[in-house]
Length: 312
Image 1 (cartoon, rainbow, N blue to C red):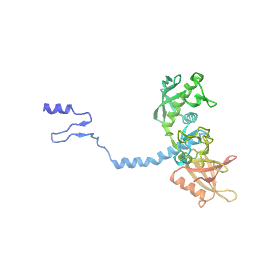
Image 2: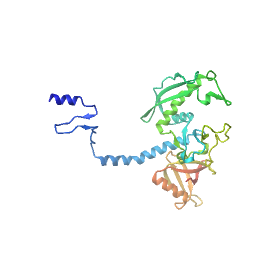
Image 3: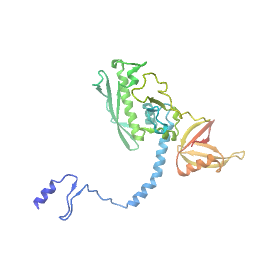
Image 4: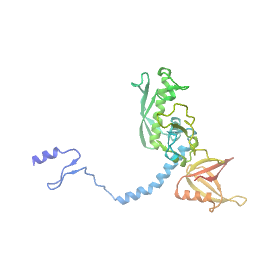
């Protein structure tokens, strides 16, 4: 018996010893699920629609608060639109944090580290926690004098001592906030087409296009920062936006013209002319029924906002 116990004591931590003499040793034993699996699955499914609606509402809010140039796309010139991704800039992340009431804690002081490969250059790094409605992420912010924004001017390299150190420290703080916001809402490498689907005008994205191949001719490339073909701003009389509809009510104007009053998930009121047979009204009714966001063109005149087009 003592010999058997000695063998058990020497077993690896991930091996569960047998409960009787006839049992085999089971590796990676899993604790059995306790409860009604089907009941739990159904309960989760019931809340998915509400969860999806909540996520869509937050994303629509974020996109509406973003300005032209708040997203940047770095890629090769030949990369097709459907394969491109974008990233959020720091200034936009700061606005989102303010508007959504993101709580920040445990921010560390920026620490300076010299760059051994490039004498004189250095970077600053800090950390912090960002919380939104009980969910927290830990973020690390880094800023370097090697960043071309600081290290180059008028096509020439700047010496490290010519770069103001407080700028690098401040950028470190901002990068930490940006990484925290991106982590909270999954805003890393957003597909360009998804950004368009959410209602952002992709002609307002900053495009940085790289030449292909290191052996290309060393001349200035006029297309280095040009928006790729296909990103032209839509020609329309109004602003494009993605809305999630909370309510639609049919009505008739004083002149007998049918219309619907539309209320979105943020409480904004707008109108669309037509009855249920109208293409625009029908598309909105379907989006309302399915609780899915829909891209629309909204024209504002005075105190009234009218949906003039459904963007497909």
